[in-house]
Length: 249
Image (cartoon, rainbow, N blue to C red; front, side, top):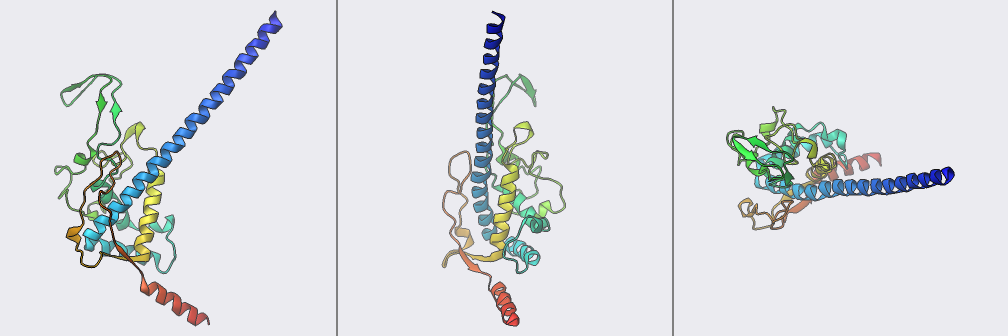
């Protein structure tokens, strides 16, 4: 009887182990899926908003391209090490995320306990929406909040990684967006190389005032109307490369 009991106990432990292992796989798969979804959809939307803001602000476009091209030179591809040398470019990314954050109301949360916020009683189990769009355009915090001005971040330690509550495009705290590291790297690499390799112009007959900033409904704020631009390869890079080839010959 004792042998049979021990055998049953071992089978139970083995079954529990198998179930636990399967649950871990499911949890891990879902976590990876969340990171990929959070890091790709928002990156695509923010890349379009960044280019929209730059085309509507030629002064900023010129300044950020000069910085990127001074660092990149005749390189075919700028990497992460190059981007660390681009303070104005990084400020431009922050300003884009301030004005055109991926999700205006972030992701809904639920309060676990009753609490008092600014004199208001918030019961437990209350669904909470954070209006980050209003926070990041608050005139009491930001000077000329509707203006696209990366310079505001040049002498500022404010970052978008959840420690500065005036800039929370990805949320904050323990439930901050898990895709931030991947999204930030991809966004910087994509935009830096687009600005380094191409000159960007509006289609013929179109002026910057024609570009709208309407958004599609949804969790991620995609631009409603497509951004159409003309990309022209940098001629002086081609000339430099051609000169180098001639010299080698």
